[in-house]
Image 1 (cartoon, one colour):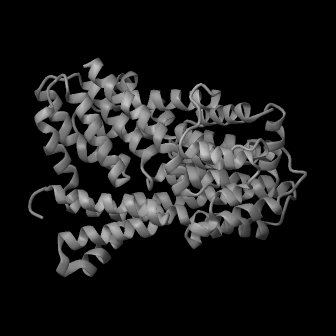
Image 2 (tube, rainbow, N blue to C red):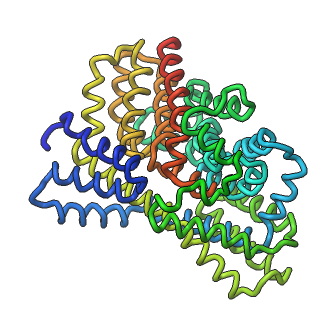
Length: 460
């Protein structure tokens, strides 16, 4: 395609429909990518698919993501096998006496682990699911709470991977002076309306002020009737890799040490947070350093031989393969959407409405559509800044307000998209089927997004 057209909307529609119908996100994304490439250059479909796949796999971000997700899986497997996670569960039960208190503890833990949404989604879900299971909370509700305290919380805290990444983009695009990226980012925090409303919404749901409704109500009723979590996940309807991973997680707890000590949970988690901060919010370096200390720490206690620890780590890495596969497929799909010039089409279609008063609301709406359609919250921000920010400056719009609209759209896409990395990892960490998680949380995300759009109209 030489110029953007409405046809670029076809692949995202195909993916969303297939994800709901087939309940197989990886297959849906691959089919969507093939549809897009068939529209782009039908005569070179196979070549373009191979080239795009290799390009994605060679991308530094994907390499980083594979190592981070796999490393988290390895660490979680150690925490489970040594009984650290079970010990935390027993400790948490002293303070949880029902559904509300167990979910509120999940919320608090999610707010505390604010450094990175990956760290948050995987740690909080895997830690709290045994506690919430005891009080017959559906895994869908747990995943919703985890997802709502992942990206939305990270966006609001200037000491996070989101702030470092987006602050760097602001400097690279001349919006902020050298060394002032995070400072400009902080000026926009009060205007990141979606993140504020998403956190407020999940708190209202936990407290029962906003009741469970729609698919979430159905999931909660199933859990209340005593359906085991493994049945709630509809394993007969999900792809084989999901089933393998979920059963593997269940098996891990069967072999966990019942006499595990609480410090074997807290020490690695605190090390992970501390090392991540020490290495300038680099989660991968923090994870490697944590494993380097955790292995001898467990070894000195003679919890298990080193060979067994390595086997557990490999099994934990394998448990993350469905999540890794989904995110890789999402990156391939995002590249195809870029070839079809989907971002340019959406922005050009809405540019006539970009007056100083309407700009923040229009930016939030357009970027939310793109982030939801492509599953790329960080990528969309990187693509849109060079287009949106000069336009904002030319019409003399409120710059922090526009940045807040962009970040709001990014956090919405991260939470609401069926195949975004944050949604995938929240479902994986909580032991919930991905599509079930996406469908049950979407109504709440849309309510927060609707209020955000109105908020930007009123603030302008």
